[in-house]
Length: 90
Image 1 (tube, rainbow, N blue to C red):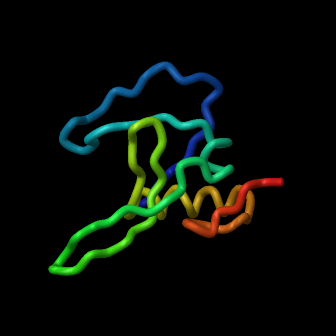
Image 2 (cartoon, rainbow, N blue to C red):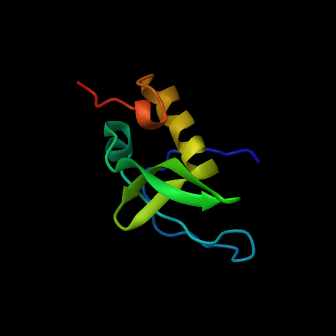
Image 3 (cartoon, helix red, strand yellow):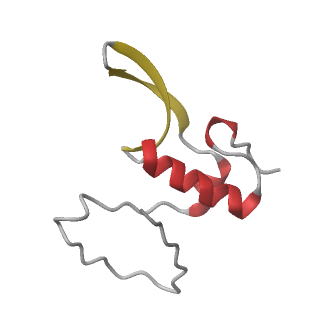
């Protein structure tokens, strides 16, 4: 998997290939950079209870590989840490 990031002057709409993409969500980068919605959630797996990092914004939860990709991008943008270590700018 290779994530790609693009800057576009204007966004109209996505045309999704439903066999490859389940859903898309748009969030302003400043909310992600500020650490809005950062937290954890319980995740039972293989007979154990895990506590995993997440971002909950506008009824959508980012977690797992998606969150790791987003965190890598955010850290490359501002160097303020990733995951639960993301610090508010200022």
